[in-house]
Structures are given as structure tokens and as C-alpha cells.
Amino acid sequence: MRSNNVQRRSLGLLFGAGLVLAALGLSASPALAHNDEIEYSPAEGAVVTEQPGQFRVTTDDELVDLGEGSGNAMAISGPADAAAAAPLYYGDGCVALDGPSIETAAQLGQPGEYTVTWQAVSTDGHPVSKAYSFTWQPTAGQTLATGSAAMPTCGQAAQSTDAAAAPAADAPAAPAGGVSAAAWTSAVAATAAVLGVVAALVVARRRKRTLRQSARPE
Image 1 (cartoon, rainbow, N blue to C red):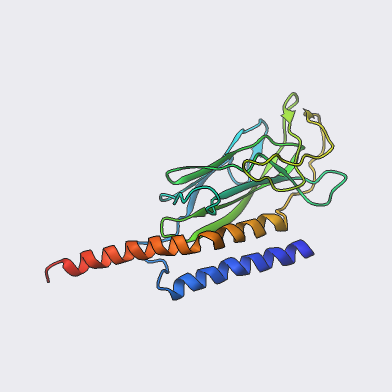
Image 2: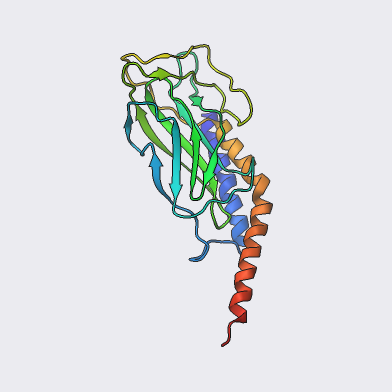
């Protein structure tokens, strides 16, 4: 219940940040619209049987790279183990931008439903944050990773659970994993840290476009 409350508060803060940008005249227009996702890898709702290795979200426009800690992030969360009620996280928390795409590397753990939560800065300067799920049903012989109880941060060693990595075996699907309060809190903190920079970039872009339009002959 506490996690849900924190998530709702975090989403409220993100929404409030959007209202602040709108009040500054930075709301989206046909020329400056939010990025929309057009492809997930693995696909949303897919049943994955082999380790994908890479997780990628592709949008319909370029993403803004403002450097490390800029609000671009991905988290891969899966089923909780027997000793914890919270989901386990996979990967090292590092992301890479490639034009309109954001991606991260991770090896999955026990079978069940996994959630990919991602946040990126749109070409219009607004942060976009969404999530999707897929099902992991590894074939025999697949090596399973050890999950982390805490959401990983790029450049820091993950805190793994006591369970060691092991080959896949026939096992029932575990309960669906969600995203912890830490993920949403981190996303909000990263977004707040770059709002000033993003706003400045968008203001400059809009001012430049306005000057070009005013310079055209009537």
C-alpha cells in the first residue's frame, strides 16, 4: 500500500512538472510534440523463451541526451523471490540512447511476468515515462540471473539476493512483478534535476523558430 501511495505521489509530481512547463509556454504543439513509442523489444505481451540480452524502446522522434543522470532511465523488474514481497531488478541500470531509441542490457531470472519501466526526454523537452510487460518462460538450459532487491544505479554494484544464478528448470510462472517506490522516486528526482536545462533548450528552440517566422516577408 505504501509503495502504491509513493507511486501515485511521484506520478503527481511528474504531472505537476508538466503543468509548470505548460504555464511557461512550453506545452506541445504540432512542431514540438511528445515522443510516442512505436516499438518494444521484447514486444509488449510477448512470451520470451530465450534470454533477450538487450531491452529497447523505439519512439517516433529523436530523444534528448543531456548526459548521465538526465532523466533517461530503464528498469527491468520481475517476480519476487520467496523471501521478499517486492519485485527483483535485473541489469546494471545503465542506458544508451541511439537516435529515437533507448536501451539497456539485462539477463532475466525466475520465470514469470516482467515489467520494463522507461523514462526518456522527448525532442520537445518533456519527460515521457511509461511501462509495459512480457512473460518470461525460459527453455531448459537457459542460465538465469540473480535479481537485485534494490533498483540498480549505473556505475554502482547491485545488491543481489541470496539465491545464486542457476539453469532454468520447469517451474510455474511466478506472480507478476511491479515497480518499487524507489524507481518512481528516482525518476522524479532525475526529472526535477534537469527541468531547468530542458526548459532553457526548448525556450531557445521556440525563440529561434519565432524569429525565423517574423523575418519572412508578408
